Length: 81
Image (cartoon, rainbow, N blue to C red; front, side, top):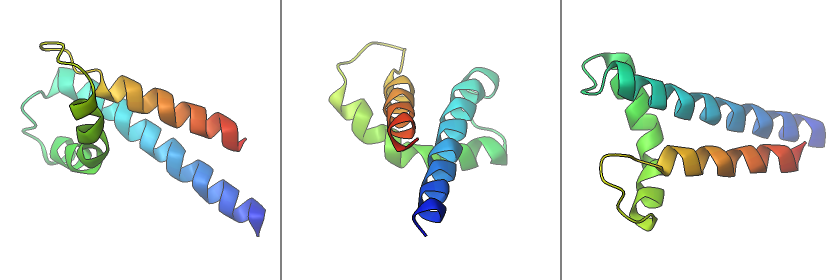
């Protein structure tokens, strides 16, 4: 049973990493979120990114919260392996 739980957790974290990467790409392609897919990715990732954004110092137009979350999730994923 432990293997199933670990695999499910690994899959969930990998999916979140993919969504964060997708959000970063979408901000370049569709910065105003005109498409439903863009809005969906934003709705899924924003609850995780907003607290990180509040903790980081202001950096102007560059948002480093996806980078921080990506690094944290990558470390978690490596720890689970």
